[in-house]
Length: 254
Ligand code: GLY
Image (cartoon, rainbow, N blue to C red; front, side):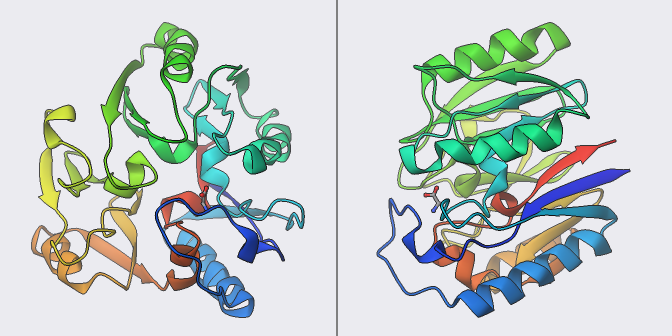
């Protein structure tokens, strides 16, 4: 059984952090509607959705992925790179505690879950404006004993590693080569995003299906040509907050 942990959109979502994007007004009602449709997509691919209440004091808190890395044996509670986001982890740690042994990233380590790509027992952490080497070293100390290999990857031009690359099939990654060098992630088939759709590399893989934004039709054609099953969602409002589909859930097997 798979739980998808989500959190309701904050009433102060318009005060979210922005790094690479200019601020545009977010339509809160539409953002909430899209988020509920995203939760419906998670249910449709077999997840049990567990939604946490909104946090008015934490504008970015819908992006629960940034708060933890969950593997079958344990969970690492992150220390988000933006000061405004540090307190987001408290509620997530409380929810995960009954299910996993918890490890906590400590200063000077900082890492956002959006910078962590895991494929089976291989983990890559993007060295970004939000995530640093001390956090990678701690992650290796926490998860190495369980048989996980922790690597780093350099980014250019995007917020998080998973803005640039996500897994879309057991052996395939969807990737923007302008933002991350595919040589950093050896051993996979690489499906490149369409050059006109640089933000198209973020997909949520559940089983054999991806939850994928409607906004990238040309990259979608490439995915469908590879036989990848998709459930499409409209993620226009979280995109204005520099978020994407993986950011809005934390998946755990129970
Ligand atoms: N607004 C998403 C982030 O910057 O963390």
